[in-house]
Length: 232
Image 1 (tube, rainbow, N blue to C red):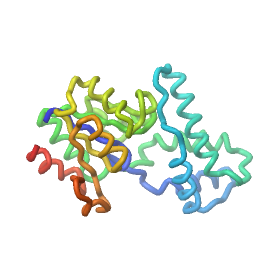
Image 2: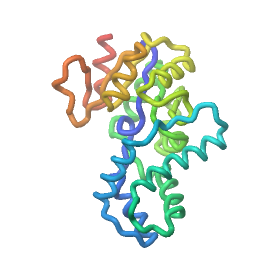
Image 3: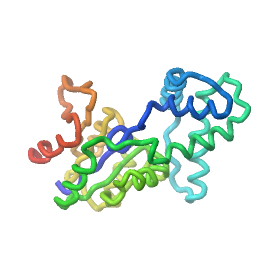
Image 4: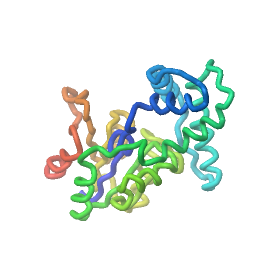
C-alpha cells in the first residue's frame, strides 16, 4: 500500500459547535433572532437537497464566485420565510467565519496519525466535497503540509460519490486504486464511492453506527488505521 487518502469534514476535523449555533449567533448581530436548533435542522435539510458542489473547468476567479453563490443559496433557503433585511451582509460575514481556525477543531488523534504515516513514506491526500476554503482551513489547523495532494469537489471533475473525483486524485498522484486506501465517515460518499473505483475503503465510524453491518470494515478513530494497514 502506497497511498492513503482522507475525507476532510467530520473525518479530520469538525465544526467546533453545531452549524446552527454559528448561523443563530451571527444573525443576532443583524437583529434577526432564530434559535440555533431550528437553524441547524433547516441547514441539514437545505444541504441535503443541494446540487453537487462541483464546477469543473472554470478559472479560479469564476470558481470563487460560483462557490459563494452555491452557499448563499443554501443559507438563503435556511432563512426562507424569515424577514432578513441585511441578508447579504450577514451572509458575507458568515461565509468568512467558516474559514477561520476558531470555527473548526481537529479530532484529537489527527496530527499524531498523519505524522506517523508521513514518516512511514506514504503518499497522503484529501478527497473532499468542499470548496476552496478547505486549503485555508487545513493551513490554519496546521495539517496542510502533511498532504501531497488536496482535491476538493468544487474544483474537481465531480463530487463524491461519483468516481470522477477519486479517479482524478489517483491520476494526480500516479497511484493505482490497488495501491491506495480511502478513509471517510460517510457510507455512500466515502466507503462505497472509493470502492467503486477499486480503492480499499475504510469507514470512520466515530459514533459506532455501523458496527453490525456485514461487509463494512470500520474504525472508531484514525489510530485504527495501523491494524487495517497491517492486514492488507
